[in-house]
Image 1 (cartoon, helix red, strand yellow):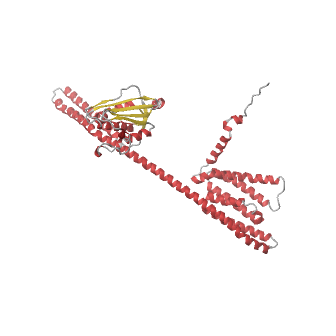
Image 2: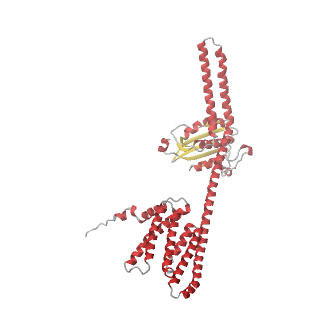
Image 3: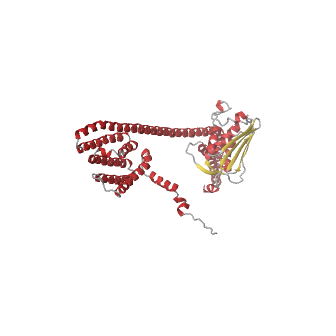
Length: 472
């Protein structure tokens, strides 16, 4: 028994030639016309397909008819008009591809109306009204694509075309008077029928365009609302930075006062230097004093730069940095935030923990939680910060030995404006801001607290991958 192995056709096995892929490529090509108006851009694919069908179907239809029978007497003009209209339809496709959508549709409608006018004039209305596809097509394209004004203009022009056809029929009929009487009886019903069709198209198109305008207006209002909310969020974050800066002000003033004392001490050395008899010793003493003043001034500048940089309102500066190093650099500000009765324990450097976010926002999160810990330890205690890797996240734990919270309070601490402090002691927005910032980064924040045993906040931030961290 022979086994015959079936071989797939390359066209069937190649996914690039599947019907779905081919249709997707055609649809993409139809939508790629560079048209500015949004409505016209949506209508362009269907109109291109219609024009291409019109440009190929008319010649094909005539070729099929002429293959079995000759041209009927008097229909040569119809043949010429159909081929001319087909050529113009294909030309209009090229105009649409170049972005001239409305001129292309107007040209095609003009060609259809001119063709109808000549056909009705040459052959009469009775011969043309058997197939009213072109008449209906003119009304639909004018109303749906070009709008109300074009719709009623085309309707008026079609009435003129019908009049030409009726006049031709009257001239070609032996019993002209009797035929004119019949035409006068039939013409009103024809006009009323197309008037009803035009009115229905008018109302339907108007309703669609009004709905589209309302939808666009709502979309614009939604975008404006999103911008306003983003601005409000940025202002709120800045307000929190300023509040945290205010809490730090006393500690910074203390540090700065110490630096001023050092500068005054070095400045006082000039008197002793001037009393030295040896010019070389006098110059060395003055240089030493000035060097000390310069060093103390640099420290003061660093303190003010840190505070001003923290409270800035610039755009976010996304960067990759090490969490442990950032907390270590934040140490002076944390020490000034807590009184001397609170022992501060910070993480030991044990490998980099890279994250990617705005560094000032990170500092805001740490300082907001630290400020709440300080208020929870009025009689002193300890505040511990630790950081380590946890799967694809960086876990930062901030633990205090303060008063703690009940479960009811813990469930609401991230609500905006919720606070257990007096109204003058806080806004109730600090932890809400921390919660929003962490969630916006794709992280998580958790809290565990027991009354009388302190509180632990756990921040989970996405860890920057190795390649990304190395590039920064």
